[in-house]
Image (cartoon, rainbow, N blue to C red; front, side, top):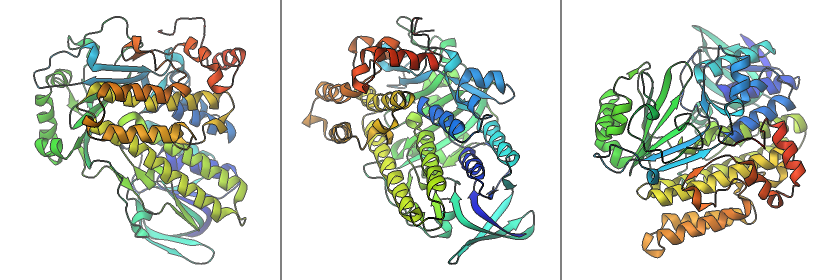
Length: 522
């Protein structure tokens, strides 16, 4: 095989397949190369409201109607019941203080709703099904697809790039004008180009251990949680975060009876658990946290345990004259807060715009440089926030308050995009917002500093002061005691913060399937 393409995309996960589809829609000739084969399990499964909105926008803008239903739980289940996914109504956080804990009380809970009812809820992406579906869609649109490819060489000349290796036991060579790497951290281009790796500043070294399980109980099925009143959503229908002093554990329930679960640990916890040992490390974690032991008492892993010895990653270079890394290959911080998908989808959107406007123009390289700078800046902003969360895992009230910086920026960004004003939130976490950006960075620096400099109460007051000008979700309401519903009245009261009228907001809510007159706690 020795053929020439406009674009070669390496990695047929959701990101690579989605970008390949968009490029093919432009009339470019695209080849998609995959080292493994579908179906397969990969880390990263929990979407967010902003992720689903970006997916919906891309499907609409580039005429990909088969992808639109996958942006909401209700339309996904109605249109593609054969594709497994998980119902995600919000973000649930539970603090575990000691090995003697047997119940999680209200003060150790943080529940942040993301939708008012199941029909327009977010989803956990069961990647074995989701990625395979997107790859099949890419092929249906005319993308050439090769799996079980072992790439060995990357060579460039003035006009093209040559990729060579082995495909099903035979040598092959492919020429492409442009190459995109969607293979994840430390992927093919990072190795082939011998790119340097930069540290994530002020971020701890972390490891991960994860698998898929059957037989995992829901927390609501046990006596281990105290629900003081009616929560804003069923607490297990969420991205579930169990927080410890030196790390955390995630749980994502899928509709096929499978639960994704994994531990992310800083050095002290990783050493105590001997995380690289897999099953035995997992068993130690279950023994260490009795509430988790109860949830997993009858659970069985249905995939081999996977250990990642270095989770954080930041590439020193992100794009060149004829190549680019997607954000998922340019860097990774942590699964905490599910930031990976929106970062990657923003990157896909930006690369797609460059292909659409500047392909074969003299602006192409300068636009790639801007893409590279924005990708790195957003990665650093994410690391700054999550690093501060790690520094405060031992103080759950401060930890919970710090998450509001994320939820305030995300809900504001989603709202202005839905109102057709994306220019009000052009960056992830609003990191380049002229007021919120530097104020957020300042308070995060304070949160990582010695607590003797500022009391926890003072720090939490500062956080609420910083988010108040962009709070469209009632996050500054202390009476909610860390349970935050989706309430249309919060958005209507915040209309002036986004320069919208009450009628504009009501029309937006109607378009989104949110009955503003109904209870928000469906």
